[in-house]
Image 1: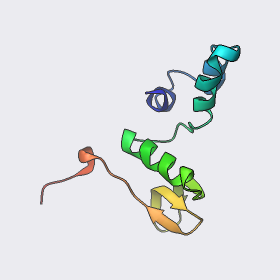
Image 2 (image 1 turned 135 degrees about the vertical axis):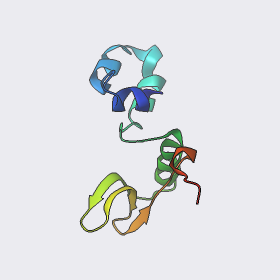
Image 3 (image 1 turned 120 degrees about the horizontal axis):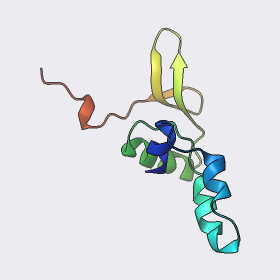
Length: 91
């Protein structure tokens, strides 16, 4: 939900960090460090976290010349597109 709010411009990471002061909010601030605000869907968030948890260098929403915008560029060479059901078209 935070990723969606960031993408829609409804909040910012600095604003959220400011609202989570003190030791009791340390875990929540840690979660904010995992957010980059570029995901177009929840499944992209899950994929990004899985890639990074497995030590895979991940760039998100990369514009590649001759190809266009891709969801992920892994390790600088592998393109990954993750589309939710809203992207499917009937033949």
